[in-house]
Image 1 (cartoon, helix red, strand yellow):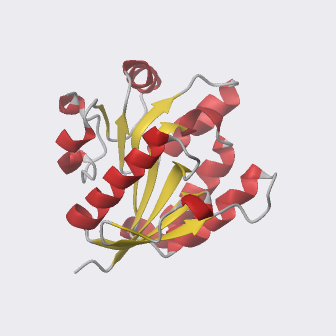
Image 2 (image 1 turned 45 degrees about the horizontal axis):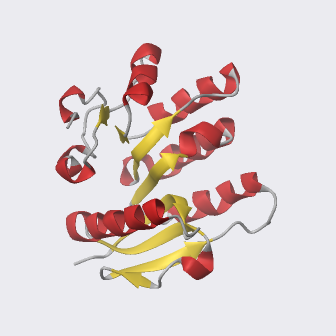
Image 3 (image 1 turned 135 degrees about the horizontal axis):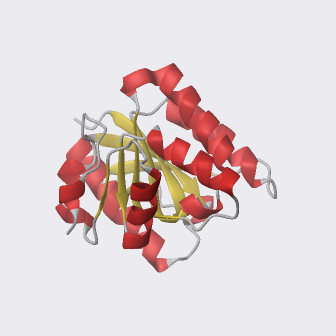
Length: 193
């Protein structure tokens, strides 16, 4: 029975073929493997389908156009009501306000404890504009249950920073689904595909 909820953060519904394909793959996995029946998708509302592979989708847009940081409020609100928070695809760990991301993830860990699983899937990390951004990005990643990287440069950055998180590198996510929510925080060295 698909009664679980998820919040999906990424660049969805912006007519980017890669992100739209990734949305379809992730929704299929969330529904079939994790029992998700409802998903809050951060993205361009009109372009987000109402239902996909049996999962009901709710588009979540920025309530204040032009102030990107405000989007973290609906991410926090929706994630409190979710079983999974997934940061999906792309270089979202290059341009975010990482201090705000850290505060939101920290609050979620306090409020939901272990009831909310947090993952970043198919992401690139860096390059960073400042050491401040780099520091808070790595702190944010350290609060996640699992990280699946899409390039060797990102993995090297996390290795060099000794980020305490479960992370690995894969060019084919379908072969790594079983490793995404590991119980222990450790480097997933064996997930390279």
